[in-house]
Image 1 (cartoon, one colour):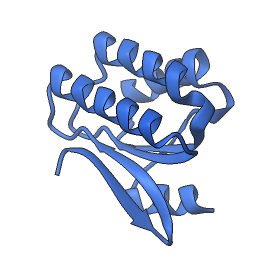
Image 2: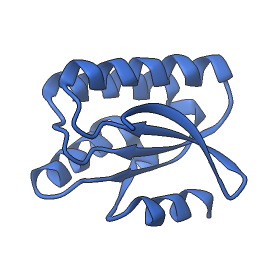
Image 3: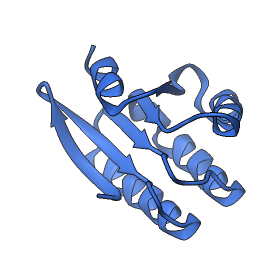
Image 4: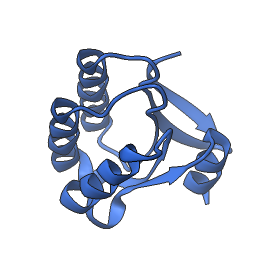
Length: 119
């Protein structure tokens, strides 16, 4: 189900952002909700992002960069699913510009991504 959820995997809490099939405005809304949650919780976090069947628009990437600046100090690890072709190029640019060493690592499946996050 698209949106923001907190999930538990192998005893670790993960912020899961599911953008599948969502519009730019919906995706930006989820980002803002995640930012608010992370800042209110004020603790280190793991993220899993699913961007399958969604487009990373300029507006979305701009908002993601803003969120990264505000919450990056709390980021432990991030994983992303659904990145292929042109999305991989955008992810590489995004990681270089906004995420530094804590960039989102791409995976082919949510299971692989979850296992990476809890290692």
